[in-house]
Image 1: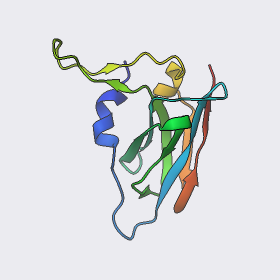
Image 2 (image 1 turned 90 degrees about the vertical axis):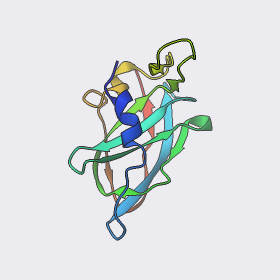
Image 3 (image 1 turned 90 degrees about the horizontal axis):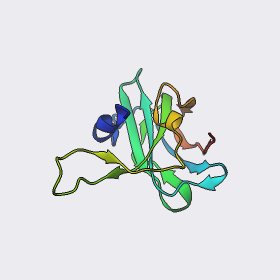
Amino acid sequence: MIVWIGVLPWVSGCGSSPGDPSGTISGRVTYAGQPVQQGVVTFYSSELGVGISEELQEGGQYKTNTPIPTGSYVVTVLPPEQPPSMEEELVVEIAPVKDIPEKYRDPSQSGLKLEVTQGDNSFDIDMTK
């Protein structure tokens, strides 16, 4: 299990201060050329101490609605979280998703990096095995 699961609530929605250079990100996530229908894209900058996550929409599309500071970000793609059942302990479970390989879930192995510039940024992710 990846540590990012516990980080997601903290990561989502971290933004920049008014007046600081910032940008938004949009793109499409595919696996072997096919759109990934469920999941979460995360962008995190350890240098800046900020990040953001967005759920995938129809056709594998995503868009950050909250601007984030310009800078270098590591990108991961995570499966969607499954809500806990009422009979079990409150444990976050990950849905089994075969179109998000393990390496893209780990920030140290994903190989995905983005330099966010001021304004709109486009970043498509085509995952392979």
